[in-house]
Length: 313
Image (cartoon, helix red, strand yellow):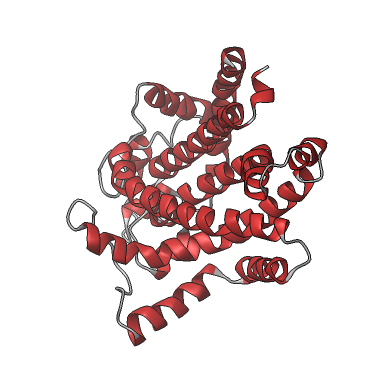
């Protein structure tokens, strides 16, 4: 396991370097001149020249990349040209909101999708199987923004059980925080639960037809023990992979859901930065997102060793 970990870590740095080059290079293709946008309507040449010098836009592309990477290595992602705040501060303000939303959404997805997939696999061809597949089809086909609007109309407007929008820090009021986050978390988790259900069902059906499962049943073990201890444990590998990728997607910013429920998360920060041509913020946010994806994939690979003893050998 240690050798495997070292090999994976050795591939992370080149990957991040390539991602950083891709981020920096592709961003230069965005239309518009940030210096002219920041100069305002007057378009004073002196002001434009000042901003071009401040943002290093008057230097060659390799030199600008080297300046940015030098700051990244030192833990400095730059400064927002609009708010004059360090990019790390902006990320630290927005990321916890999206992390909480993503974790709650994954809780909903795991609590709904995995049990539904197990039930569908065990009861293959029964009404439970058709019901689970119907739920999966509904979850994948339902747009998040439409489901969010319907939930607001039902639970906020009609029943008045939950707030329609907004965000409250859990450190200020935990109850109000959960009340504000439960609907957007369910909206995001609903689609992921549908995908998890299909993958869990497929993996369980494949595992339950293997020799060791038949041997476990022949030994007289209860069906619950066979399903949960023998079949499910060996079917978790693709589920872990999918869960890590979906969590990375959520952390990169659930833009539409955050917009519908007015949640000041990572997604809104990305969208605002792109429209404002705030290069430092865009580069910092995308780099953090890419690092999160890579880290989650590494953690998923390590989790394989915990659930599948054969990989340890």
